[in-house]
Image (cartoon, rainbow, N blue to C red; front, side, top):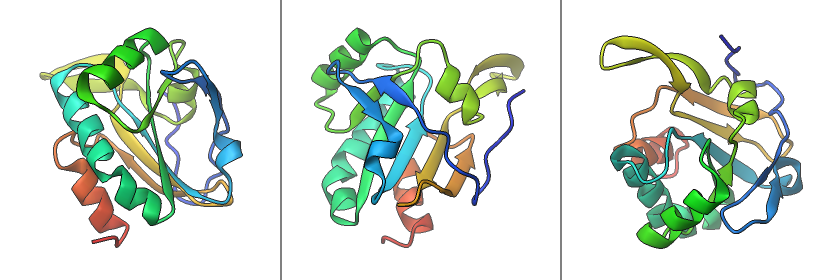
Length: 156
């Protein structure tokens, strides 16, 4: 079981390929607040709802100084199809070997339909401009999560 991050912890840096094929490095976004969210699989109902909610909110979030990165184990090609199919406007990153997911405590044992399984734990992190975890949320709900996050951040 991986360790869960807490507010005040340094955010583990990473470089991952995006749905457009470019590499994105977390530390290159220093100076901005970054919302990093982990989701199980592109093009599934809950993950689609969550990604669409973030896309619908991205302009407002950016105007408040936030960037949004969505990370899943899906390959960049599948993420590109996800972006195209649903008109997504957020950055989608691929972590097929689950290294970053594990570093953030977003991969491990979870309950799925009453059974304990190993998989992606839907999680969201807010990273401050210096690269420190400001907010860590595990086992978040896909539906309504962006609205709750905005409230938690005092944006509404």
